[in-house]
Amino acid sequence: MNLEKYSEEDLDRLFKVAYSKVSGTNKKFPQDVLLYFYAFYKHAKSDSDLKVTQNPINDKELISAFKANAMFQVKKFSQKESKIKYIKLANKYLGDEFQIE
Image (cartoon, rainbow, N blue to C red):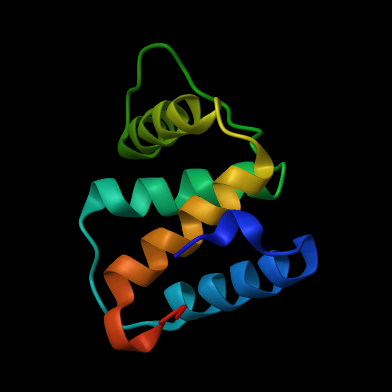
Protein backbone atom coordinates (compact mmCIF):
# COMPACT_ATOMS: atom_id res chain seq x y z
CA MET A 1 0.00 0.00 0.00
CA ASN A 2 1.73 3.14 -1.21
CA LEU A 3 -0.32 6.03 0.14
CA GLU A 4 2.49 8.48 -0.53
CA LYS A 5 1.48 8.48 -4.21
CA TYR A 6 -2.13 9.47 -3.46
CA SER A 7 -3.17 13.01 -4.33
CA GLU A 8 -3.76 15.38 -1.41
CA GLU A 9 -7.47 15.30 -2.15
CA ASP A 10 -7.63 11.47 -2.17
CA LEU A 11 -5.51 11.28 0.96
CA ASP A 12 -7.77 13.78 2.77
CA ARG A 13 -10.85 11.81 1.74
CA LEU A 14 -9.34 8.53 2.93
CA PHE A 15 -8.19 10.15 6.18
CA LYS A 16 -11.75 11.35 6.87
CA VAL A 17 -13.14 7.90 6.13
CA ALA A 18 -10.55 6.30 8.41
CA TYR A 19 -11.38 8.75 11.21
CA SER A 20 -15.09 8.07 10.80
CA LYS A 21 -14.56 4.30 10.89
CA VAL A 22 -12.25 4.45 13.94
CA SER A 23 -14.68 6.77 15.76
CA GLY A 24 -17.67 4.59 14.96
CA THR A 25 -16.30 1.14 15.67
CA ASN A 26 -17.18 -0.97 18.68
CA LYS A 27 -13.73 -2.56 18.67
CA LYS A 28 -11.54 -2.01 21.69
CA PHE A 29 -8.00 -0.87 20.95
CA PRO A 30 -4.97 -1.18 23.21
CA GLN A 31 -4.28 2.07 25.04
CA ASP A 32 -1.01 2.71 23.22
CA VAL A 33 -2.82 2.36 19.87
CA LEU A 34 -5.50 4.82 21.04
CA LEU A 35 -2.77 7.29 21.90
CA TYR A 36 -1.27 6.95 18.43
CA PHE A 37 -4.67 7.43 16.82
CA TYR A 38 -5.06 10.55 18.94
CA ALA A 39 -1.60 11.92 18.21
CA PHE A 40 -1.64 11.22 14.46
CA TYR A 41 -5.10 12.78 14.16
CA LYS A 42 -4.20 15.89 16.16
CA HIS A 43 -0.94 16.35 14.28
CA ALA A 44 -2.58 15.83 10.89
CA LYS A 45 -5.21 18.45 11.76
CA SER A 46 -2.65 20.90 13.25
CA ASP A 47 -4.47 20.75 16.56
CA SER A 48 -1.84 19.90 19.14
CA ASP A 49 -2.54 22.39 21.92
CA LEU A 50 -2.06 20.36 25.09
CA LYS A 51 -1.80 21.65 28.63
CA VAL A 52 0.37 19.41 30.77
CA THR A 53 1.25 19.89 34.41
CA GLN A 54 4.60 18.78 35.73
CA ASN A 55 3.24 16.86 38.72
CA PRO A 56 -0.08 15.28 37.83
CA ILE A 57 -2.38 15.05 40.82
CA ASN A 58 -5.39 13.44 39.23
CA ASP A 59 -6.25 11.06 36.41
CA LYS A 60 -7.17 13.84 33.98
CA GLU A 61 -3.75 15.44 34.27
CA LEU A 62 -2.04 12.05 33.98
CA ILE A 63 -3.97 11.32 30.79
CA SER A 64 -2.89 14.71 29.43
CA ALA A 65 0.72 13.75 30.11
CA PHE A 66 0.33 10.50 28.15
CA LYS A 67 -1.29 12.43 25.29
CA ALA A 68 1.55 14.94 25.33
CA ASN A 69 4.09 12.14 25.18
CA ALA A 70 2.33 10.64 22.16
CA MET A 71 2.28 14.07 20.50
CA PHE A 72 6.03 14.46 21.06
CA GLN A 73 6.62 11.09 19.41
CA VAL A 74 4.76 12.03 16.21
CA LYS A 75 6.06 15.60 16.07
CA LYS A 76 8.82 14.58 13.66
CA PHE A 77 6.30 13.67 10.96
CA SER A 78 4.72 16.05 8.47
CA GLN A 79 0.95 16.48 8.44
CA LYS A 80 0.78 14.29 5.33
CA GLU A 81 2.85 11.57 7.02
CA SER A 82 0.58 11.72 10.06
CA LYS A 83 -2.48 11.24 7.85
CA ILE A 84 -0.82 8.28 6.15
CA LYS A 85 0.16 6.72 9.48
CA TYR A 86 -3.37 7.21 10.82
CA ILE A 87 -4.85 5.54 7.73
CA LYS A 88 -2.41 2.63 7.98
CA LEU A 89 -3.17 2.20 11.68
CA ALA A 90 -6.91 2.17 10.92
CA ASN A 91 -6.34 -0.38 8.18
CA LYS A 92 -4.33 -2.59 10.53
CA TYR A 93 -6.68 -2.49 13.52
CA LEU A 94 -10.10 -2.33 11.87
CA GLY A 95 -9.61 -5.28 9.55
CA ASP A 96 -12.65 -5.79 7.34
CA GLU A 97 -14.33 -2.63 8.64
CA PHE A 98 -11.78 -0.52 6.77
CA GLN A 99 -9.71 -1.79 3.88
CA ILE A 100 -7.66 0.50 1.67
CA GLU A 101 -6.93 -1.86 -1.17
